[in-house]
Amino acid sequence: RARSAPFSCFLVALLSLRGEFSVLINKVMDLCMEAVDCEAGSILEVDEKKGDLFFVAARGPAADQVMKFRVPMGKGIAGYSAETSETLAVSDVFKDPRFFKEISEALKFETRSILCMPINIRGKVYGVVEWINKKGNDVFTADDLEILKEISHGAASLIENFRLMQKYERRLKSLVSIIESVPSVYNSKSLYECSRSILKSALQLTQSDSSF
Image (cartoon, helix red, strand yellow):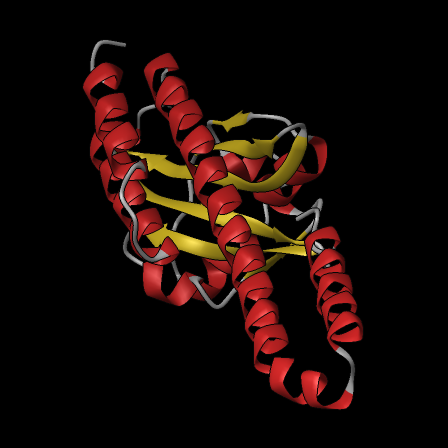
């Protein structure tokens, strides 16, 4: 339990940094691998349009290859965790019918145990964090679960902030478009009509993208 305290401080400091989403996520995962002492780990995000999960970060022997895979919602340990919002600790994946072995087989990576937790943002699941294969053929501990909780909360903050940045970037682009249209609008309308047109567009902009 004691080792999670300094790790938490590192995580808080990390989340205060400004930078690319993928860079921050990868740094979080690097800290994870060191703290949990497992062979691999990954963060998957829910794709609501496609109804599945995609990898946003991965660490371990097959990290680069796993990024191209997608996991159906409700399938596998990760998909089940995302669908049910349950934390799962599986000591022997081959005894669990939920195990999605297709990815491990394609990567030729032996998965033995998994600790998986959903990423919750205000009661809604946006993804999962999972650790794979505790080193030394050991089982995941209560300390590992505490660290996983920290990472889940940290990943939730990163995903939420990244989506907010995307939303405001869209708004900014729209505002720039409105401002750039002022000369042409002004030339074709009275000052009163021009002001109403810009105000209407700005109000529509603030009312759009109100959710993730």
